[in-house]
Image 1: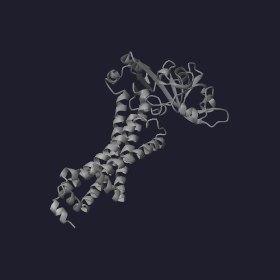
Image 2 (image 1 turned 90 degrees about the vertical axis):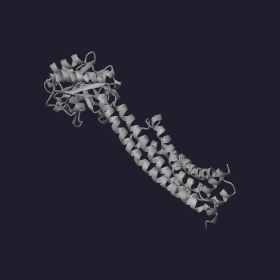
Image 3 (image 1 turned 90 degrees about the horizontal axis):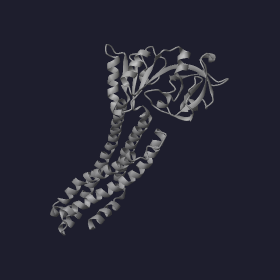
Image 4 (image 1 turned 120 degrees about the vertical axis):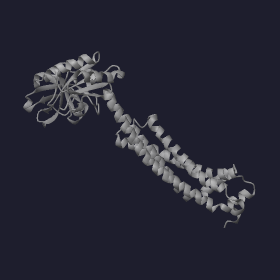
Amino acid sequence: MIFWEIAKRNVRIHLLRSFLAMLGIVIGVVAISTMGILGNSMVLSVSDSLRTVGDSVIVTPHAGGGGMGFGSGTTSFTISEQEFQQIKRVSAPNVAIPVLRTSERMKLGVGSEEIVALVYGLDPDDVPLMLNLVEGDYSRGNSGCLVGATFAKDNNVRVGSRISLGKDGEKGTLRVTGIIEERGMAFDVSTDSAVVATRDWFDGTYNRDDYDQVVVKVKNLDEIADVKTAIEKQLNRRETIVDVMDTRKTMETIFEAFGQITTFVSAIGGISMIVAGVSILNIMMMSVTERIKEIGIMRSIGAQRREVMSMFLYEAAILGILGAIIGGVMSFVGGYAISSLMLQTTKYFFVPSSLIQIVYGMAFGIVVCLICGIYPAWRAANLNPIDALRHE
């Protein structure tokens, strides 16, 4: 292994130059790995946020505005009871859940400031199918309500708190019976900053006999497209009355977009790696030029071409492996920091699909170094021994 020892000696002799070459590899590995970790963590985060609505078909009034289920106040166009019954019939045996929604002024206690928040009206039997609680119980009576986790946190609301709705409480008072688990982004009902009352209370208070949207919970995910098609055929036969959204298809589109973003930012990191590779190529070419006479002596005493070539490839491998290891360690620290700062959590960092990004970055760095070391090594191995010995 004398050529391996010679390669290590040459790296030590030109330590500063070798360090600068490794620095480029380190930067490239860090860029590729951290961007890959961030992209994967974002996909996992969005997937968790949307997992509760991935089994839904959401029906909203056409051109009016249910806001595709994101909650934007009372709409001008609604879904009638007759249309709801048609949706319920064609989507059976899946559960069709009618949703009422409005914006309302409210006070959360004597002397408190008036705020405006969304109020949903849902049938008590349907609420457990859509919403999970972190505290309290589901409300079944018309005097109780549920509130979102963000609403409770921002307004210091607890189970048992009372909410007065309307100007001077003209719409009545509701007692909080439960706090809804935070849902994040949702296509069906955005409850994090909202109040959820019973449908009977909503009907009696706002005199409503129609709906702002209908959410169909599909038991078999393979049937989502069929349910969507059946609803469209039933209600949109003559003209477009409703818009029907397949949440699983929407989620796939979102994940595809995130994947493209991740690929793009990783490609930017790859550019820095290629620049580092050019630096390695330049340094190896300089090393060959500086050691032409040494190569000539080696060849004249019997060193074969492949042995000379392996010596320079060893140098490239040393630079690549050391740079990749340092870059891998820094990527671990950097990925953890970015996840903590940008996503406010590190739970998506310690998963195989995120950590494997570090391995990919390190492997890419080593491969780039070896590829960029091939030509200088080939050139060194093919020098004419006589001409090399004459070189000054």
